[in-house]
Length: 230
Image 1 (cartoon, rainbow, N blue to C red):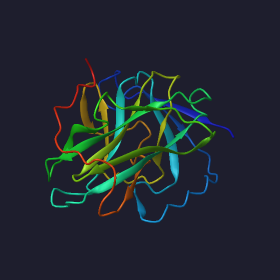
Image 2: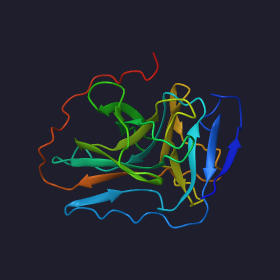
Image 3: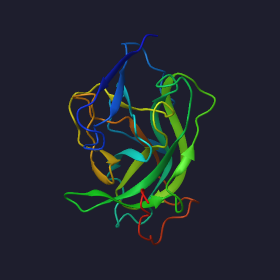
Image 4: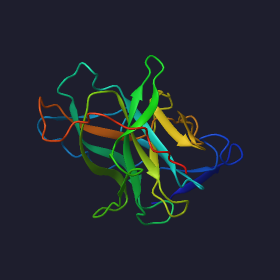
């Protein structure tokens, strides 16, 4: 499969979330068939399932990208369990291997103008590191979570290393920005912008278990979120 590397630098590195990124555009071809969901689960998503670009930051160590999901509320006493977080990624770009990434769940609060807030999961550290194995090429990578939430949240992934030692994320082929994607870059959260114009919808999903009760421990209280930069 041929890849067209499109490097679009729109401003000085760090000036905006879109600065200093690279995007690899796909050829029109079939993607792997989706994995059927188990009984009692459903998938929350904003993307259309058809990827357009793989994206990463050149100087992206410590940069996050994620989607907000307004599932759950303080009045939803039983909560919902995030069984897994699914990220469309690839070991073909930019270096033909998996390097790993971190994942985390952040609170989403402040309606009607909600923004990512405190880190809810994992309870310690900056995020949970995950190195894909047993798969190659581009496709969905599922990261086990098993965490109960009762509020809106942002599911996010961190590019741990600078390019080319990193795993990309994807944006879908819908040119309409659905405005649910966020990025943490240059020490702040903001709406995701991409050099892969006009594509903005990040292919990051969550699998939810809709059960009245779940053996996972629901969060009771949270301290202040640890700074991503120290």
